[in-house]
Length: 268
Ligand SMILES: Nc1ncnc2c1ncn2[C@@H]1O[C@H](COP(=O)(O)OP(=O)(O)O)[C@@H](O)[C@H]1O
Ligand SMILES: N[C@@H](CCC(=O)OP(=O)(O)O)C(=O)O
Image (cartoon, rainbow, N blue to C red; front, top):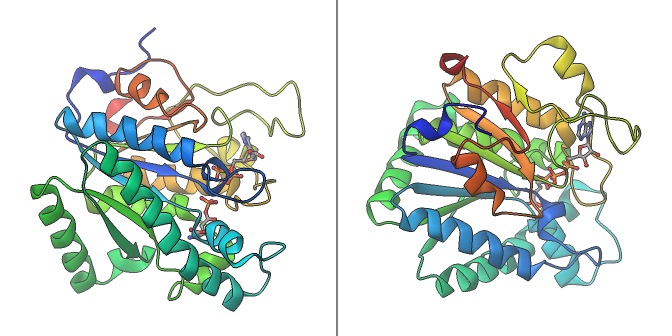
């Protein structure tokens, strides 16, 4: 069933965000099979002629594992150091999996306040646009050594919406550890029901979106709603789907009823 007009136009540019819980095993180590699946789908979509940006988390998780730490650090400086180690590991793994599909990737470490500084915004925009002309898939994470606030609150969801706004994407897809937004947190309520389409982000929608309960994820649904607000206000549709099946990205592009879709103002 087609639930939206997303598939009526060809997508010129999409941003896909994937969180730490999707990218790591319960052991805390990187889930390489998952990274491979994501690389395959995104490379395929790129081959169709759509510009793709990947916003990724999991630098801290990868660093914790590589440093052999027993648990995720509590202090900001330890998280920053772990992210610094883990970001190398993460990009090394992405470079390898994307190379299998003949795709060149690049790394951009951003802070979400870049839109507030015209010079920084112009520099970042120029970098993205030039990378697109080279047919590169840019891979974005927070600059965790610089953006202390974001590391503390852990919120790559907002950064993905800011990125989608900067590159003027048509669509932002957030891959989560859950099927989408429910009318209450399914971890606490087994009767919770999936909300397939959100046409307006009301107070009621905001009130059902809680925090994260995972050991590695941080933002929960609350930060995804914050991201959706930025996206829809910027004329960008946003979808939340389960990251366990990256093939769902094709379904979103085809306008099928998967996950939760937040419609931009003009689509209502
Ligand atoms: N209303 C809700 N619907 C769905 N998930 C919710 C809701 N409220 C809170 N959550 C929590 O948000 C989590 C998803 O966010 P998060 O833990 O940050 O993972 P990820 O980084 O994979 O997106 C869910 O697993 C769930 O525990
Ligand atoms: N930027 C950091 C933290 C971001 C974070 O935890 O976000 P998420 O996993 O999407 O809730 C990292 O890469 O580990």
